[in-house]
Image (cartoon, rainbow over all chains, first blue to last red; front, side, top):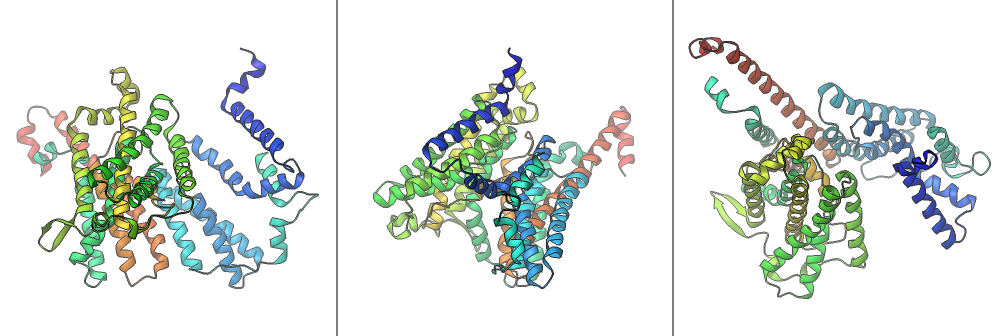
Amino acid sequence: MQPRWSFMRRWEGLLLILLIVIIAYNALNTPGYLTVNNWVNLFQLSIEKIIVALIMTFIIINAEIDLSVASMMGLSACLTGFLYAGGMPMAGALAVGLLAGVIAGLFNSFWIGIVGLPSLVVTLSGLIMFRGLAYVLLEDRSIGNFPAWFNQLGQQPLIGPFPLAMIIFFGSVS
Amino acid sequence: MNALRRRFQPEQIRELVLIALIIGILIFFGTQIENYFSPRTFTRISTSVAVVAIVAVGQTLVILTRNIDLSVGSIVGFTAYVVGTILSRNNDIPPVAVVLLAVAMGAVMGSINGLLVAYGRVPAIIVTLGTLALYRTILVEISGANSVLTNELPRWLVNLPPVNVLSLGALDIRLLFFIALLVVVIFQFIASYAAWGRRLYAIGSNPDAARIAGFPAQRIVFTAFVLSGALAGLAGFVFLARFGNITVVAGQGVELQSVAAAVVGGVNINGGLGSPFGAFLGAILIDVIDNSLIRWLAISEFWRDALLGLLILLAVATDTVIMNRLRKAWSRHELQISGSEAPVEKGGSHHAA
């Protein structure tokens, strides 16, 4: 009945407490845990999940679900690499990769919103299908040798010690 | 036609729609693949469908109550690996005890899910997503990076897959497929006629009403999860018998395959609608597509998953469209009878013609 602390009884409050306990435990037991480098690293490792989870919130609030996101990520990345290896400039390949994600999403929403199938069924087949399309593109090859600026985007600090991943995180959360 | 309409509801002939779809797909691939309609194709598909079919039946029981069990893939892998390890150390455990051990292990893991969902009131998708990871992690920990090897297993188990129960003409019903058939038949009867089975539907279609009506809803949901775990344990035994070599990733993905089979088979993901037999047909439909795509020379092997996903989607869409048409036809018909009470026997046939 104390309004100031009532948020603690909600799920977010409980999660915050859990997070603090885990960080405190790690900070006490792992040397170098609280350094900037380690935190930058932690964000870089989880940025894809953060972006996907943020949008997934809106889908789940609507009592739907999207199981196909991981396959979409794979398809979009494979398409970008495929086009770049085929001679397209990196910026164009990136744009087409993003567009592929939009089209895959539109494909899902056509079957869910217009035909009226359950989202679980549609995105379950999407999970298999988009991954399958990625196989069609790359078969058993792997693609590397992207331009230097693109590689740096993921790995080098962009502003101060913070890389792109962290900036995207704070941009998308706020 | 009218007598037919009065006797059957669209939901009862949904299985017929699925069977028609399967036959249609078989005919299509029959024209595409040489020597497709052979006893070997039947044996191949019936053996590979056994594991998913057994799990899908358990999954159906859970989905009927408006829940979901995502942990089954880990339960299949866990029981296959642990039972295999125990067997490779003591080769002379009697077969019946082996099967019972697998089922019991699955039931224990299922009861943990059931306790948390039914009595702990945690959403099923969260509980079973958690135990999916948990059971797999425990398996990885206790395995110490070892695998179960076929040559360490007792001979009776290794020789199990080619055992025939009966032959229909040239088609052989293998023991592993027979086990799956038995499971489907038993649970189809339970779901259709037993009080416990009917209550699954009641809880799934309206949980509040079921509770007010005084059903022991918590106990029924709990039992559904225990049975789903037990059937996943049985499937783990079948998996072990079929493959022999078991690594810690065994059974990965079975959770999604079983959900796909149930949903393609007409089990409503929001509970209350569907049947174990439907889920069985769903499992067969997916397996027929998957197996046929491998052998279809017109496409490269890399196209397989892309087409499989698309075909599952199209199968469900076709099924939904046909069912909606049928439901509309039925409700129009019902309006007609209730609209013209007395002369319906004489004039009714006139209308329909």
